[in-house]
Length: 311
Image (cartoon, rainbow, N blue to C red; front, side):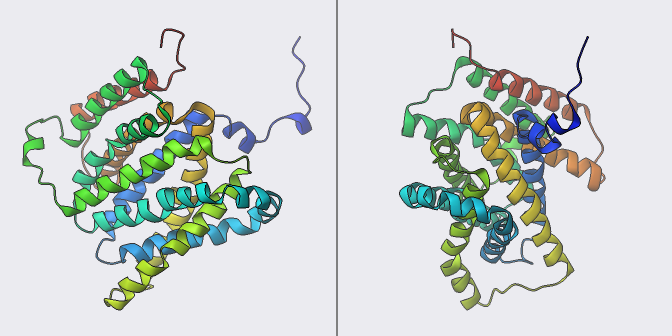
């Protein structure tokens, strides 16, 4: 006979989600896909450095009331590990997002989604360089399979499309942003013992402060923020979804399964991006979408499984 737990002893929905890394990492990819699509849509309307500053400054202000007690309790830990936390703030928030938003001003969404698919390779590279962590065979095969699926989706099943893509300075900046984020991803498992809200609140606040000189330079060139309906809606979206929720999910996902097993979920970003194009831009689903989705999901399943003794 099964004994039901009293309602007071049952884990809350938030507690249950906090132990579901694959769900959290999938939602993270969905939110980041929306960020890329929206970032390209508002290119030329919202200055990139101002958007990055408002994004992380707003995230800090949103989280601060909830994190204040944790920050007070963790302050001694923060002071002891300040250099590492500042590196996390720079790589995960200031530099990464400034470069990606700047790059989206000068490239197409197709290019950005194609470059985004290389994210797991940067994570693997920095994990190897910084900590000597090598990919298992399963992770290598899984990343390769999901990358093939991404290419099929982005190139619409026609590999000759790849030769027609022209890369420019915006693409280089977007690739640099991914490389910087690879450093953040590989360092997150080394974060100090502190509450997740303390970690993200301190690093987003520090990242926003790091952006002040760039925003000042942007304003001096005459590129200022215009507060209209599109700007406000964009700011609300980027603060809540690809910032607060996505980074909480990403940090927790890496805590549970590690950076190399979490990195293949980056390949879901272009998958979700193409799905958004189907849902919101009127594109019709094709056979190559199905083939690509199957390959991406298969690759993620293979790469994110727990390593066996032979691995």
